[in-house]
Length: 175
Image: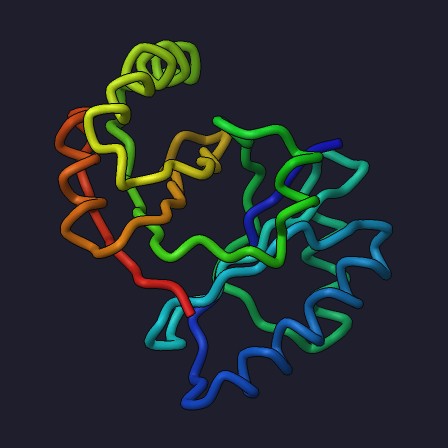
């Protein structure tokens, strides 16, 4: 089934406010016959990223369900999971990665080129063993990708990105 990135800014000042927002998104997605796979919020509580699964490849049912639940979001976009199996992500959904890197992909990049690059570069992560690459969600429109990592510190993630020659457009610690 297709996956979708639901992304929004929050006005939250406390984690409970973000949890309440997630608590409104999940039933809305379920009402549209979808399922929330994981949700991640930045450490400053200002951005929320939700991955949902839905039977239809169209964003309309999810957008409609969110509007019906009075949940405002910035974007809903189809994404592809890379670097992990969906069943594995579902199994460890409660184990939050510590860091998120957003990379705005170059305009001339194709999905095939992106996936070939990812396959060729991924073994290089072994040069930075203290960093664990968890998974990437790449937007089907190739606007950007979200890369999740575990590492002792942010500097290690930046080093890992250097090793695989991948830029960092936005960097987030996760709550």
